Length: 316
Image 1 (cartoon, helix red, strand yellow):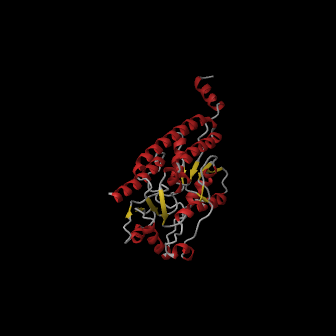
Image 2: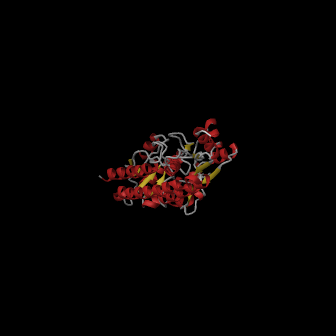
Image 3: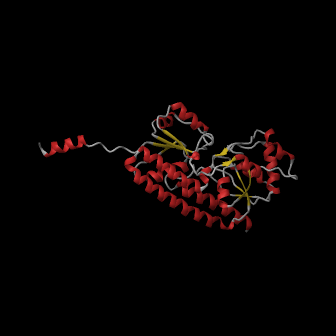
């Protein structure tokens, strides 16, 4: 037997190394966490287009095909992206669907917890505040899905992602676990940095575009006094606009923040005559940032810096 033939036979006798699983994610923060855990082994896919709104999104046929071929799908859950729940059912996904908001240890808020605060009706506030339902807005109930903005949740999730990858690809289990540990350390370091950035903000009342920031505010001790829109980021109607101007004055808000994917002119019209400062755009889903493993840390520090800059300028 020649050496070449012996080598060829040895290749046939040895099982080929399995490729890492095909992974699909829903939004940029989840993509960033999955990318950090997968490291150099493979790159996860992402469904949300750059700059798109996760609440209101439609899959293209090519994205539906990629979803159907995934071995693992990491997503927040149907509370954030009901369109993805329908898509997973529609494509007949044969891989595993992992809803991260169901991960053990995840801190979950209910929408009515924050609505009781951010939409509280004051005795001396205008009657319109209690009648948002008359204007095409609607209250949200159930789980607040914006849980990625709590870094403690993100640390739980990288472990969950690593666990699912380990089951699907046991040959690389050690790498996934090591990468998850490194990602958790990076998130902890970012948390420390965010606390430093927000050190001077204190309890300054701020108003955001929609109810996406309660986890971030809870974790870092911010005072979110209200929101323009409700949980799904739908633009407010005329009655709510009128009530918001009164609410801004009543709550002594110092800053109001527009949001990516929404018309900043709306915010400008709300603050007119109130003396409230308009900050830079916030982007809670990170869809305007560069996608990749560093996005999660950049998202948290970016939110913190935007808030801190506006509050500092308003106080000067």
